[in-house]
Image (cartoon, rainbow, N blue to C red):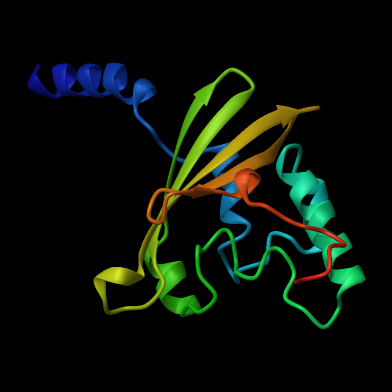
Length: 159
């Protein structure tokens, strides 16, 4: 009897809980088995506006001033440039919250095995378009920035 009550209670509680699912799989792709640079052109089909506009401006800046650092000079999914792949893979935890054709996926992980400053919490915003989850934005809860809000002065010459 107690086991039946426990199973019933868990089945009621779990549907509302934040767990990993299809939207999380779209995010996991960028972390394992190897970290991938989100702004890379080969992954553009996995994104949608507003973040695709920043990627286009980043491309323009790179073409206009190839010897200078472009707008995106770090890995947005990591909120860092340096990391240990084994540590990221081992510590990665994903949870998602769905709201119709929108999802929020939280990725928590460590960049390195030691140091409190290596812990990261990233919030990925996704939209379901034609049955596929596409990333519309990435935000760092750790460093308090949002990718779509970053400024990119494409084609402008530095002073």
